[in-house]
Image 1 (cartoon, rainbow, N blue to C red):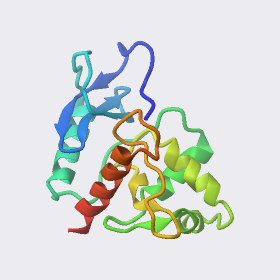
Image 2: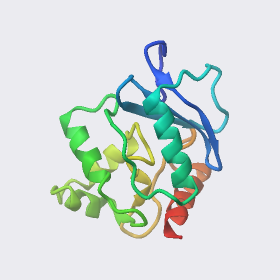
Image 3: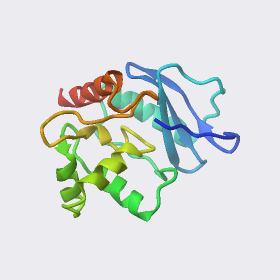
Amino acid sequence: MPQIIGPLDHLFMSSLKTDFGWMRPISDGSSLVRLDWNQTGWHELDRPNHVSRETKAQLQAFFRGCLRQFDLPLAPAGKNANGQYWLNIMKKIPYGTVMSYADFASFAGKPKAARAAGSICASNPIPIIYPCHRVIRKDGQLGHYGGGSDHHPKHPDNLARKAALIKLESC
């Protein structure tokens, strides 16, 4: 999963350790712009603000099974209006539901755009909150997942995290 490169001095962040690895909600001061996620943490000190603290609290509630829908101000980094459109549709995929890339494209009103659906999942800057883990292959296989490491999206560790997120929501 790509992370923000360059100075972080104009951004705010709060790190948290989860069973899925380290996560770091990053805010521009008024909205969540990214959710960095890796297995080792970061060297930079946290600089929290109200958005990064609230994101952290909601993620903790989600992982405890107490939250099914996030309520946060979102401004995903690097997304134009089309990317925002796809992410906003993704956010509407119900908790505990999985759908194929083709079904996601149809859900977005673009039934012939399964590849675009896959591309938006692959470039999602705010995983879990925009639940790309709920999108799988038509044959029921997991497909790809970049969440939690810089490994290739086909790497077994990444796919294990995707499967675990789906399982978490099935309880």
